[in-house]
Image 1 (cartoon, rainbow, N blue to C red):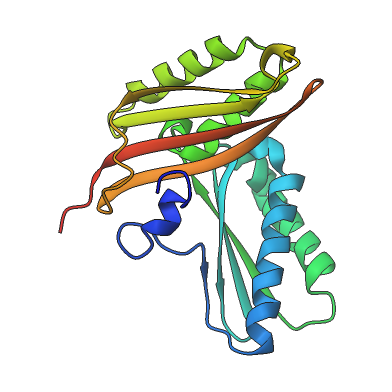
Image 2: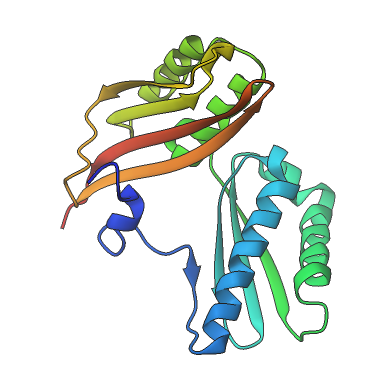
Length: 214
């Protein structure tokens, strides 16, 4: 089960929720769904250096709210909020040019990157792109995650041409417990890709933050 199902998707409405919150039916559903994917990919690609962990959406008939969770909010907000205004303007011109939609961007800060699986995966990918030894990268990332008191277990897995080897392989390290089969377990999961001169290296991270109490 752990290899076939996204741990977060498996726990929807148990201790996880949807990143897009709106109601649509018929053609509007497929339209909203595709817009969400394109806008999310655009934000993460354009503001990649801002350490974006997650992008959430809330919609109504003529209102579109974007919630950006990031470890570097200052980069997105800018001086006097100019960065948020720039983001809103670019999204409106690219995706909602001929539509009467009121767009609002909210920025939420994540103080510690090691308590978020997405940011931890991005951090590992960045280090691999800088040609750091992969074993050192894995060990350092585990040490950083282990220091956070909210994290009770962590696992990091990388796959590809590690160290420039001709044959691709898979390496992983873990500490603590990762109960993937326990539905009430609060497990944060994410993926990232490191683009190296030898090819791409996939990164997967699991963080266990205790069980949900009824």
